[in-house]
Image (cartoon, rainbow, N blue to C red; front, top):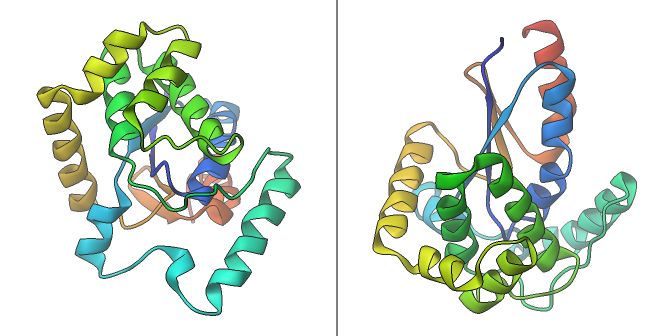
Length: 200
């Protein structure tokens, strides 16, 4: 059995959202499973010296068109949220909390949180919105809200961020396959080829 692949993503990353709709199916074609790792790009940017994509002149207008075009190409519902970007501690913590009990179910929750933001324009930086999404996915709302606010979960996300940075993660989406890193949703075809061939 081949090793799992690691998928790092930020909930405010449009390209992370697009990659999240494909990554598990691509991996399954090659007998792989995917470990999902929510990250905080704000923390990463402090280390890398980077900034949100739409903060760059010229590049911003192109990126807005490319995000929408890329979503249409994949048949994925997408709209640039009215508040963008957002702080993503709440959905990231909620995902970490859910992963402790059931990682596959936590993926479904993460996917629902992504859809809430990029398809429904719901501000998932708000813990109450996150708890509402969790409740719609069958979680107990009060437990989800308590979980994302728990000190232990905050510490666990902090430790996960430190581990991600130690592995060189600097953006979203960021995929690591057998020690090889791929950055960006436009690299998923290479990720699939790598799994199919064993690398080049």
